[in-house]
Image (cartoon, rainbow, N blue to C red; front, side):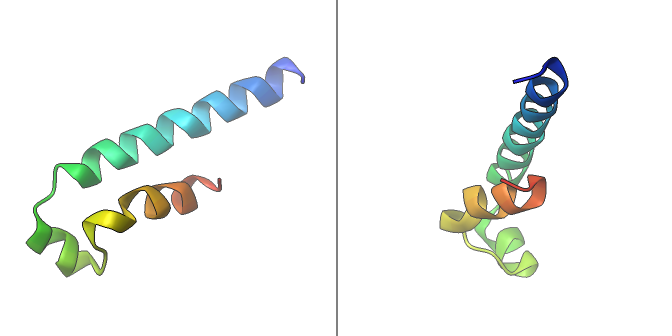
Length: 51
């Protein structure tokens, strides 16, 4: 792996963790308003960063 690809993967992982953290702080009602359930948080976060 090149340094550039490692940096890109690390950056994507950080965005993923940030998304999971932010979504996890929302209430079930707020998540429902967004059209997702708590069980889907990790899937939604993965899709948002392209995992």
